[in-house]
Length: 159
Image (cartoon, rainbow, N blue to C red):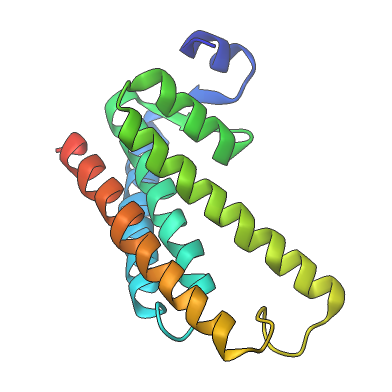
């Protein structure tokens, strides 16, 4: 799909000049806050750390798209953002990192939904120390190997 088809399907739109400053300001702060939240919760709340790490990546991607192309994402925000980035860049490593982040985010969201349905007492964990440790490892690996490299690369592109 080319960029024009995104406009035709109303998945994206040109950002109005009156919205631009507020929109940029929001995402400049949001991705940084999400990244800090990710780092701060690695040990105590590793699942939330992964979710926050992905949102840092996602928000920075939307910031990049609006700053470089004057485009905002209007519909199916997560999938459209990934798909549009694929149109804009041919950097396979960057795309892979964003897809990993999205996959991790979906996994966490699905776990949260399952937990809500079953009303587990231990918030979103099986309650075992083993699983808590596994998620700590997973969140640290996600931050170091996916979120940070992705954010560093995209920050350079924005400059």
